[in-house]
Image (cartoon, rainbow, N blue to C red; front, side, top):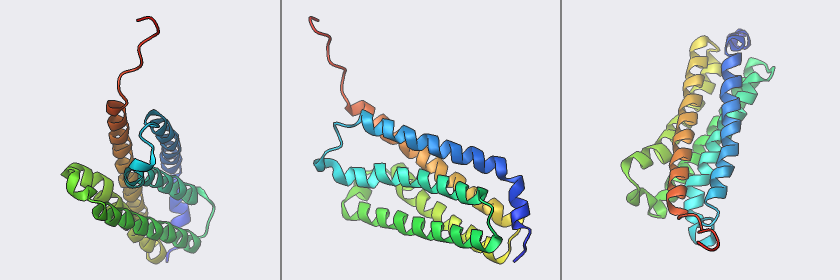
Length: 183
């Protein structure tokens, strides 16, 4: 492995700060989305919450944690190992969500675009993160950092799209605001 991976990361510093800040902000906005749909958050709808809301927050958190790790002053081996652990955990979680969605019948009731964005793209993003981490450990070159950036961006884009979809869904079901007294 090349020891210059930490030097190469300096060029990516602003990218990871920007992406990590965006992920942290969007996690906060997911709590706003959850507040909007608080009437939906019941025991009856727990399967939907576990299949759509929670994974979206987890994907934002994965991006945030990955960016934090990439900004930490770590040796290349430690960095690669942490990235591999994050990617492996995320891959396992995203795969579990996909399987759970199938068992609950969601994969047959949601349209193809939702299947792609809620299930397939997070699995692909985490798989790319695992591949990039292995590249960091084995190669430690600029190409591994480009693969890492692609993985992070795919996860961020999937989470942004899903957060928007969840929010739009919740707003359309929240109903009209109550009429003012005396109206």
